[in-house]
Length: 586
Image (tube, rainbow, N blue to C red):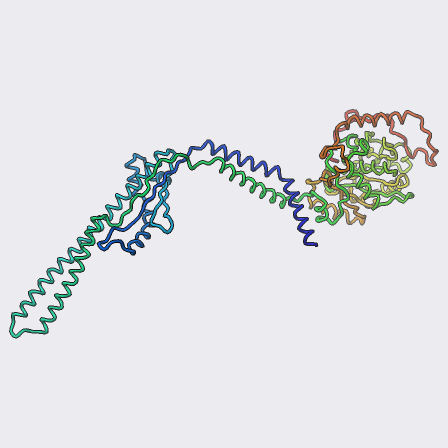
């Protein structure tokens, strides 16, 4: 069972990899096929002419001989090399008026036909007629050169045999004279006579053998000896053999697919960024509480997806995160829970995630306070359209009673308040490490069920580690396909000395599980950002009307704690406040 699950998981991973890199595979295949087809179509056509040659032995007086056939088969390989040799090609080039044999050698190819005495000669040229002419000329020149070589060899052999025959004739004459002399003496030496007759007989036998060899050599020279003949001369081909645009395009397209697949596998192997919950679990063994899809979040009020479109499909990630936080940190109703929201590196979406999580918690009936403790690059006040001062910096210098002075501001979302940064101090780490910061967070616990604290990134500065000591838990936000595994591991290691619970990881701008089946009225992949600006204007208009109407609120035992709405009413623009736009994905 486990093996089947492992195989199924591997198949799903492979399919996901193919979907993710399908564009590269298609691009490389199309590019390779297109380039190969274009180059092939513009290349000079090449024609191939073929001639077939037969290697055989000269006829012996007794007729065909099996040994001669075997010799011919062995000669095939030798002749295949000689046909491409320099002497043959040099003479061919001279006859046809070509400049040299080097270029001709690259055009000629000779291959023996297996288990036969045949040779197949191929010649390629840009002209069909010239290819056939070259093939036939090569065959003709080689046959002539081979005939001259065979004739010279046979003549030399015949001369050697004739010389031996002359020597034997002289020896036989001398022996016959000695025999006659022995016979003419009295008494006759029988032993000497027998010896001389035996020598004469041996000379006659050797002479007869040499005479037979001479006659065979003479007949071989007359018939041409070992010969090679053309049985199929070359003819001009009708169609070129190269280039073949369609075949080249198909091969190049297949090569492009292979290269793209290799590049994708190499990229996946070398890629050390976080792209899924499985990567999070493998890197730090923490749960991925939610995956926030890419919905085109922007700086300012447009980033409040949960306030602008509460039922949007893109907000499911924040609702899942709300459920996870509520289960892990249940509100007691007496003392609020403090949750630090940070990220390993800047610009990974922690501010936007914190703001939308706060809105989602408030929409579920919880009292929520958002604290912007990012005193180095604040942005929470811009998300809610609030002034930056007074805020956290003011409270750290004045004490808890300043909570009633308007620093803790209401937002357009009922039950949600924001504490901006206020005036930025010169030494941020020292300010956050003061006892007043811990006392402030303790005071905020009585104001809300959840206190969400936004802090700078963990790596590079010590702010997040300092703030974690006063929090109940820490939530890490990482950006899919941007945050590296090593950065996340270092961030977790930096927060562990604080001894606080790491709640989990939020994967921002990731690919959440498909939930289109629950939103049948919306096509898959549509972010729903159309009309966001209109939603902001309607939300601001409702907030203005609510502020202008007299509200009958029950008298609070601590009046002024709520602080009331921010003075000035409208959402201030960045230009009016003289602030620069914040970085992408706070």
